[in-house]
Image 1: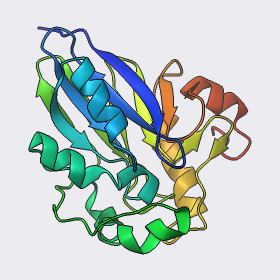
Image 2 (image 1 turned 45 degrees about the vertical axis):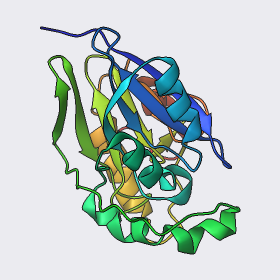
Image 3 (image 1 turned 90 degrees about the horizontal axis):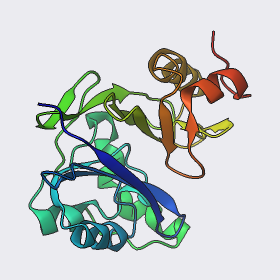
Length: 215
């Protein structure tokens, strides 16, 4: 039985990082992708919509995306999911946070890994496919909903731009390969939700992105 799904992306935190909630209006089951460094925005949204959070997912472990992870995980009794290649970054959140004016505690919940090609099943008709897209960080992933025609990409691809690769673990060669092989292979109409800034589509970026051209 198919399930109608809805989604909402909301900027939050010091750097206005975008977190995304996907949910079923009929069952009230929800997923949160990237709780940012101010998870109160998403907790409030979940409470207002009377949603039951079933999964807490991270695109990658940079401070602006992941600092609120343990707070949300404890509140909802969940284990966060993050590709294992970003676990070292996750453990070092307090090291990087002060440079951004963010306070971060040492994570006290160990994440579970998500791997390329995994399907995260929430319930009938509600699933997300994991795409491993390293380049911005080693463990960067995107979450794709075929039902919604939506991909949440973290800091891999932006409207007219791409994620920076000058931070530890970054690689422009990897990033370009990830975008071409994993993201540009999705349908052109797929809505792209980046970690910062406006939404775009796969087709628009394939035709116009000046940093990574479609082959």
